[in-house]
Length: 301
Image 1: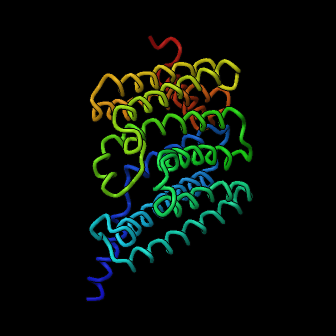
Image 2: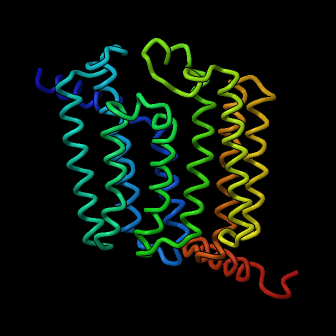
Image 3: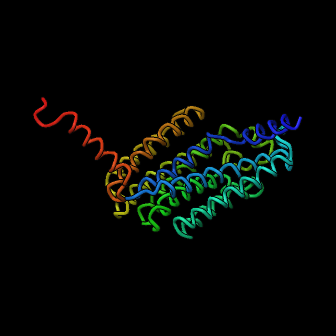
């Protein structure tokens, strides 16, 4: 019986591991880290792990609030198990924060703290405010990106801040588009998302404006020299997302927005790399070039 109970607890806690939300945040933390001219694997792992645990805390708190405070969902785990999960995950998160601070400095450790605060506040507080429920996850993404670079270098140049700002705006637009799919349910639980407050048609226009604004922000940063010229190519992808919101059905618009987010990110990464150093990418390219030269020496053909 005790073993069976333990298995049930593990399953309940594992049910709150949600890769759909965790992987983009972890990916953006890696994005920031890989931009650095030199990357410490230990620091990289501690920061990425901290980002993942912060998301896990958010999921546990969200499940607890939605199930036992608001009664919006059927229980996936008992009240006690979820509370235990929040405590254990928070202890693990704070341990990673302290390890990161001791490895890369106090500022590196503190760069994780806003993510934990967002995790604790998301469901009970931020989830009921229209602006906050739209921008809190994108804000976490922006913080994770900045933290990834900061923990490796100890500094935060304007280029990295600009990238974070662009993703904050872009992903807020994507969030509005996604919320259009859930508007019927969100109304029943009094969740005041943009589509609930404005209606579907005006929400589509809002998403379009925000996504187009992300592209305009990229071009603005390019114009003032904060981002290199190649970054302007990313604006084409955000424009494609904006067009999708008005020209396609809402489900297809979400698919287009999510799909185009990847080349948008890739364009910005490739643009930023020559400016920041991108140590791992540079080393990998040098090894690949050396392998090519050894495999196909001069005069081989």
